[in-house]
Amino acid sequence: MFYVIQENVFQEENYNKIFDVMKRLKLPYEILRFDKNGNINKLMNRRKDVFVFGSVRAARLSCNMKWIPGSFYGENHDFQIYKHFYKNNLLNYDSQLKDISDKINWYLNEVKFIRPTKDSKVFNGRLYTKNKWEDTVKIVEEKYLGVMPPVTIQVGTPKKIYKEARIWIVDGKIVTSSYYKFNDNVVWTEDVEPEGLDFARRMVNIYQVAPAFVMDICLTPDGWKIVEINCVNCSGFYKGDLQKLVMALEDLYSTDRILFN
Image (tube, rainbow, N blue to C red):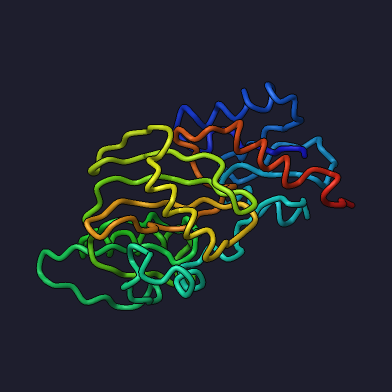
């Protein structure tokens, strides 16, 4: 495949290693840049067998260009869809669904977990106080020029988490993994423990949102849980083995398995 890779989309050292992988595997790629006005540099590639790594904006560009496979953004990466399959294996299965403009009732000094149900990047899913949430709503409204977009959110209670990990799945198989947090401390470490990987495999056997996707999992007092499902095109790499990821994508979308226009 041909790869279009957005430059500097994630502030992490490991993200730039994707370019080393492209060169090592001798795969063709082109760098995508957005200026401050959202305009892109002229892309020279004219192929259709393109895979994108980058932001949600890059994923939408992929759709407009009709690249195949392009990006999986906007498919089934939605809590409202996958909750029916994973059920109480989800960390926030007990979340209430609301629109971002709906009123939320707060107790004094209460903290809630809030995120968009879709992997939309409209705002970051995390713990919010009443003031922090109201400030976030204002920022979103300003971002969309004073017109609040319809965004379904999930509102839940804080949960105790010991550690969090990211799992990359391609064609129903785990290809690489990375821890990214221990007890609220950011720690990027390769090779998630077998129990975490076994949990992720069981979840993959229950449901797959796309041919390739990212599953964030965590260890809690109640065992392993799914934090959320993310788009493989728009997720940070942490300490994942990028060569294994790209080789799995190449195997899944090799030209002898799929016909391109």
